[in-house]
Amino acid sequence: MSGANIPEALAGFLLLFFVPGYALTKALFPEWRLRGADWIRRAVEIGTLSFVLSVVLTVLVGYGLLAAAPGGFQAYWSDPVLEAILAGIAAIGLAAAWGRGAFARTPPAGPRPEGPPPEDGAWDLSRELDRLEAEARRVRHRLRTEVRDPAERDRLTARLEEIRSETLEIARRREAEYAE
Image 1 (cartoon, one colour):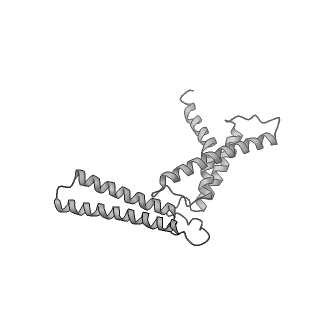
Image 2 (cartoon, helix red, strand yellow):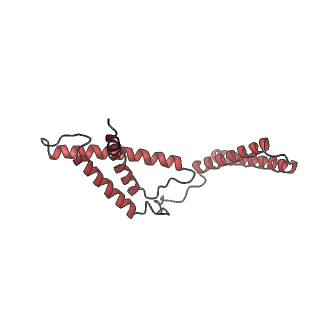
Image 3 (cartoon, one colour):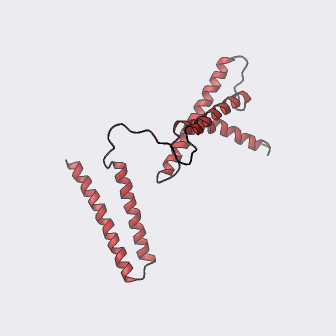
């Protein structure tokens, strides 16, 4: 492959396997952002959904072109008609995403779940326990490496004990909930 064909191949690959699906993903879920504690999970969701939707769109458009002109259309990945239709779908999807606020500084409100909000669900509990464990690791690290002052050492040791107590209290409350 010559150097002139590499950008063309990359553009074609993105057009077939990512861009149309990404445009539709942003149009369908304009509130999804790659920020906060869940940014890695959200990036995997966006990437996976973009790839799957792009492949589905490519197959559907290719099938539609074959059905519309059974004798006159040759199904090549680099066919300009296929690429033009996929680019059009991507443009419409990006316009819809922009109109729904997907690229605005502040995200639009997401869908609201029906019913009352969940009470301290497992996901929230897991996040809280992870937060406490991360804080305990930071405190232990500071105790090992940085602190020379006895008063600061005592304060950090007390904070480590508070974290341990909080963790045990969360576990005790959760066990009591399961016992009911």
